[in-house]
Length: 237
Ligand code: NDP
Image (cartoon, rainbow, N blue to C red):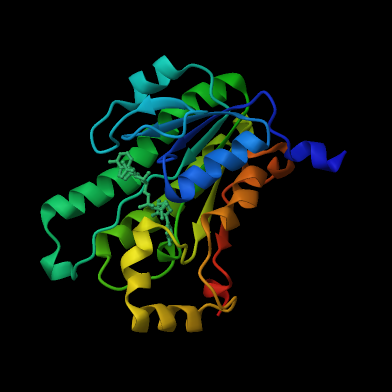
């Protein structure tokens, strides 16, 4: 049955930043599809999830993965954004954004890849952005990191497809979370954004739920290195 291929029963999933925003919606979606979900986060997640406490700015991915055990699905969702012109971007802000949004993604992919290649099976879903394709406004470190996430996704897909590991990415558009609260609070900015989105509204974290379940599932077994925009048509415009 085709719908059975979307089920995740018996799979073990790890979602970074699954305590709130997009990651929280993804953690719930994966659990609803049958996966046993763990959340890597600084703050305690919803009680139904196993908690893997870690700060992605300062962690050891290899020992974290050794302690974690079997892993079938990794969702690299946690991310941080700092807004400033390039000339005003501090080293600390640059290092934090690149560290959490790119370095940590690589380290977790590498550690998970070792486990998944040994199993001969696994799915990694990296959360990119429309700023994986555009420069954005006053977010140079974030755009650099998110462009890097797409390059990394393709490089790993290329290396690991033969080993049975699927590496793909989702590029969300404007999604209503804490991350974008300041944009939505500015009425003029908010109206300009909505006017530019073909779907005519902000996305919700739940709008991404179906895509992450799909990419984590057998239904996506021949997808390697895909970057799926879930953006209300933003990039199509
Ligand atoms: P939120 O700001 O709502 O949540 C960010 C999550 O990342 C939180 O769980 C946060 O944890 C976690 N996080 C940040 N820094 C660290 C760290 N050092 N260690 C561990 N966890 C950390 O963001 P969104 O839900 O909106 O974004 C999720 C992903 O989607 C990000 O990668 C973002 O770049 C991407 N994205 C979002 C878009 C949007 O419009 N919202 C658009 C395109 C991409 P804590 O609670 O501890 O702060």
